[in-house]
Length: 412
Length: 203
Image (cartoon, rainbow over all chains, first blue to last red; front, side, top):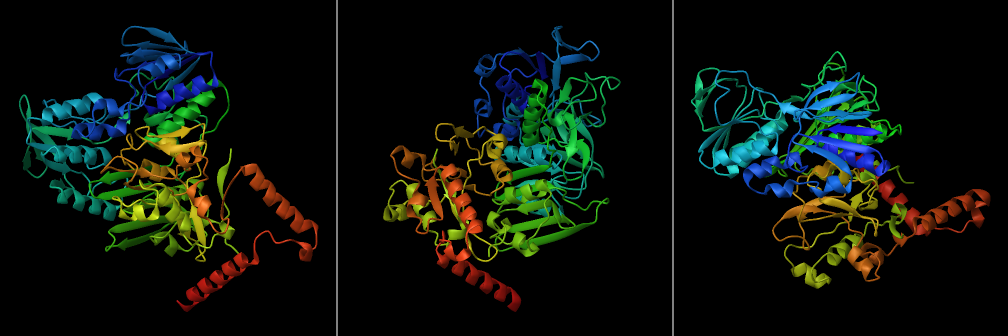
């Protein structure tokens, strides 16, 4: 059996490892565009900050490929996928045939289509190269603008602020972290950002960039201009699918997969940010581009590629952010959502600086936002994931003393 | 391999295991020494309050496969196969709290650890007292537990005891049944339950 994996992100390497553990003899080819050894993408913010050097991000040393007998095509980008003939063609002109293929190409940052977006010193924060470029540019810069107040935007802003730059975050919606927090959660994070000297502008759209050849300012709609020498665009990501012909493999927002993570084309699997998987909470296929799910999808895809049948249990959106003095953990449906009749419980303890929001659908917990005191977050998330009926009173969830034992069958 | 097994019905919530754990993970390994140390050693086992104020000693289950290992961003959490124990490398840990999202039991805490790098906040959890076990000692929480709510034994042995207990309960008359748990435990738990219900009623 010839296994080919495209991508050496966490989904790709987890799949390669899984396949080798279950099948010592088949050939495994891993096609990796990035030349750096497999690393932990969520740590890029720390690299920009200078808190770590790039070797500290490495998850698998160069030896990994040899140890697992993986034929690694480093520096090859896949340009074409020929589904009927089961061959991929890479940027270096190689044609690699496969019996089982895993597409784990991840996602690319969304580009802004406004005037001046080709200027120098406009960056993304997606891979190691981006982080290195930002660090280089930050050495001689005084001010930076981060476009997008999501997780990546906040990490970039935090890192640049730590390096002593004047930083402004521009967010389209009315609060920070719109995808992973509710309004109050976003507000608390914004307050923390402002405390560390980051300026946050919400409900604002970027209308263009000025400068030449380097960026010197960002125009906002409404005629405001922010002077800066660096821009980081963190406006979300889109699946990296340029080589896939939608007539040969079903594509919606990403590659649509079944419960075994197989695409519409037999023998071709997808995992990670590129795959549209079953969302456990919403009960529909969608993109859930988070790191831990990419890792578990890589594992499940690997098991299925070897020939065992293992269903993927489904993805649950969840994130955690430590931002200076504040911690935010969230998962599931943050709500409100039109399709469901949701009940929302909010609780804030200003003395302890903690805030919790629980979203319930009937007697089932479907979403959570926790600000500070997040140690029990995993217990709450596992309740959401298991879709179990909540048998304890709401007030216990809100208590700082909430713990696992309260979910056990009652004594006596 | 012997493991720490929790018998929640026997826990009286005295929290001696927490103290013993903190001491076992201090530099001095003595209670009085530990109290002088900076940072103050903290427990890796946590007695949680149940629905009826009953105690529950909550500690790492050393799951296999372990969700925290899968979720760890810098690859700091690993399994020591020999000891069947999930361990955290504090030098690699970046305190990102990804393991807080992953652990369904909520057993991981984040603070500077007396045995970890100085001045660095890291994820800390039960290490099955691997250092003590290497010296032939049982885990500190088990050693100190007065009520046998924590035992250190083969899971099979523990399971067999429970199975036998149930078998005896259903196969002979109740009066012949030798109590496996001292009656004091059920009395205590019944009292706690009654008190809690009364308190709830008053509210």
